[in-house]
Length: 62
Image (cartoon, rainbow, N blue to C red; front, side, top):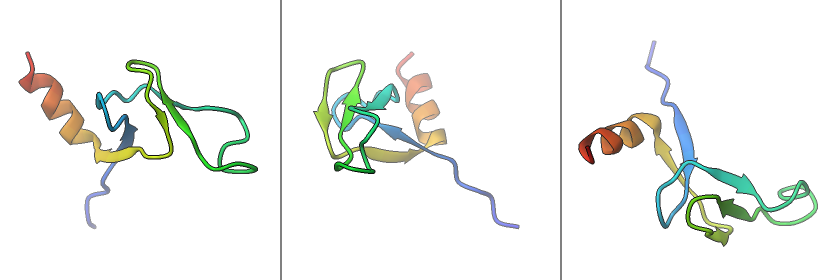
């Protein structure tokens, strides 16, 4: 059985996983708009990365 790839959404500016929708209606009544808690980015573009890549980056920075 192939290994399942786990992906998370991260900010395109600071690569933080602390992302939220701008309102409860995003993706339903209005286009999806994300807000980054860390850097304040606000926009429709978000990155989806392999969770292992994020963990590797955090250990490389130490």
